[in-house]
Image (cartoon, rainbow, N blue to C red):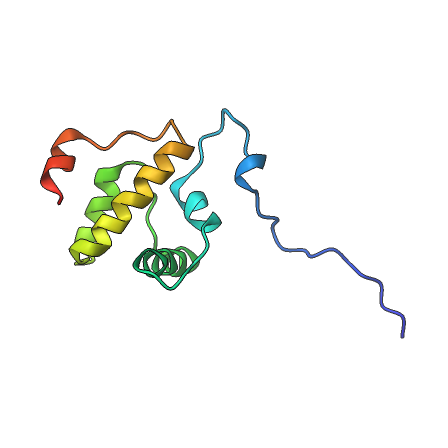
Amino acid sequence: MNYQPFPKSSTPKTSLSEKSSDEPLAFVDFILTLRIFPTPRGDLIALYKTLISARAFPTITTWPELYGFMSRRNARPEAIDEARKLWKQYQKLNPAAPPQPLQEREATP
Protein backbone atom coordinates (compact mmCIF):
# COMPACT_ATOMS: atom_id res chain seq x y z
CA MET A 1 0.00 0.00 0.00
CA ASN A 2 1.02 3.51 -0.66
CA TYR A 3 0.26 5.84 2.26
CA GLN A 4 -0.09 9.56 1.80
CA PRO A 5 1.36 11.61 4.66
CA PHE A 6 -1.25 13.85 6.23
CA PRO A 7 -0.57 16.76 8.54
CA LYS A 8 -1.43 16.19 12.16
CA SER A 9 -4.97 17.22 12.98
CA SER A 10 -4.31 18.28 16.56
CA THR A 11 -4.45 21.93 17.51
CA PRO A 12 -1.12 23.51 16.63
CA LYS A 13 0.84 24.96 19.53
CA THR A 14 1.58 28.65 19.34
CA SER A 15 5.12 29.49 20.32
CA LEU A 16 5.80 32.56 22.41
CA SER A 17 7.25 34.35 19.40
CA GLU A 18 4.07 33.71 17.36
CA LYS A 19 1.81 35.45 19.89
CA SER A 20 0.86 38.94 18.84
CA SER A 21 2.56 41.62 20.88
CA ASP A 22 -0.74 43.16 21.97
CA GLU A 23 -2.20 39.79 23.01
CA PRO A 24 -1.22 39.04 26.62
CA LEU A 25 0.35 35.67 27.29
CA ALA A 26 -1.72 33.56 29.69
CA PHE A 27 0.11 31.96 32.60
CA VAL A 28 -1.07 28.52 31.41
CA ASP A 29 0.44 29.16 27.96
CA PHE A 30 3.69 30.20 29.63
CA ILE A 31 3.77 26.99 31.72
CA LEU A 32 3.11 24.84 28.64
CA THR A 33 6.22 26.24 26.93
CA LEU A 34 8.53 25.19 29.78
CA ARG A 35 10.59 22.02 29.78
CA ILE A 36 10.64 19.62 32.69
CA PHE A 37 13.97 18.79 34.31
CA PRO A 38 14.68 16.66 37.41
CA THR A 39 14.73 19.63 39.78
CA PRO A 40 12.25 21.11 42.28
CA ARG A 41 11.27 23.61 39.57
CA GLY A 42 10.77 20.77 37.10
CA ASP A 43 8.61 18.93 39.62
CA LEU A 44 6.39 21.99 39.98
CA ILE A 45 6.16 22.48 36.21
CA ALA A 46 5.25 18.78 35.82
CA LEU A 47 2.51 19.17 38.44
CA TYR A 48 1.15 22.28 36.74
CA LYS A 49 1.15 20.58 33.33
CA THR A 50 -0.65 17.56 34.77
CA LEU A 51 -3.31 19.79 36.32
CA ILE A 52 -3.63 21.77 33.08
CA SER A 53 -4.13 18.53 31.11
CA ALA A 54 -6.76 17.41 33.61
CA ARG A 55 -8.42 20.85 33.34
CA ALA A 56 -7.92 21.24 37.10
CA PHE A 57 -5.59 24.25 36.94
CA PRO A 58 -7.43 27.52 37.56
CA THR A 59 -7.08 30.67 35.50
CA ILE A 60 -4.22 32.55 37.14
CA THR A 61 -3.82 36.26 36.40
CA THR A 62 -2.09 37.55 39.55
CA TRP A 63 0.52 36.42 42.04
CA PRO A 64 -2.03 36.36 44.91
CA GLU A 65 -4.15 33.94 42.86
CA LEU A 66 -1.17 31.64 42.29
CA TYR A 67 -0.12 31.95 45.94
CA GLY A 68 -3.67 31.17 47.08
CA PHE A 69 -3.83 28.16 44.76
CA MET A 70 -0.56 26.83 46.16
CA SER A 71 -1.68 27.49 49.75
CA ARG A 72 -4.99 25.67 49.25
CA ARG A 73 -3.00 22.67 47.98
CA ASN A 74 -0.88 22.80 51.18
CA ALA A 75 2.28 23.39 49.16
CA ARG A 76 5.59 23.33 50.95
CA PRO A 77 7.49 26.63 51.29
CA GLU A 78 10.05 25.40 48.73
CA ALA A 79 7.29 24.83 46.16
CA ILE A 80 5.83 28.29 46.83
CA ASP A 81 9.29 29.76 46.36
CA GLU A 82 9.60 27.99 42.99
CA ALA A 83 6.13 29.25 42.06
CA ARG A 84 7.25 32.80 42.91
CA LYS A 85 10.28 32.40 40.63
CA LEU A 86 8.04 31.13 37.82
CA TRP A 87 5.69 34.09 38.29
CA LYS A 88 8.64 36.53 38.12
CA GLN A 89 9.84 34.85 34.91
CA TYR A 90 6.31 35.07 33.51
CA GLN A 91 6.17 38.79 34.38
CA LYS A 92 9.40 39.43 32.48
CA LEU A 93 7.95 37.81 29.36
CA ASN A 94 4.54 39.37 29.84
CA PRO A 95 4.74 42.96 31.11
CA ALA A 96 0.92 43.06 31.20
CA ALA A 97 0.99 40.65 34.16
CA PRO A 98 0.28 42.45 37.43
CA PRO A 99 3.32 42.80 39.69
CA GLN A 100 3.59 40.98 42.98
CA PRO A 101 1.94 43.22 45.64
CA LEU A 102 4.12 44.55 48.44
CA GLN A 103 2.15 42.84 51.22
CA GLU A 104 2.50 39.46 49.47
CA ARG A 105 6.23 39.99 49.02
CA GLU A 106 6.60 40.65 52.73
CA ALA A 107 4.22 37.89 53.81
CA THR A 108 5.91 35.10 51.87
CA PRO A 109 9.47 33.98 52.66
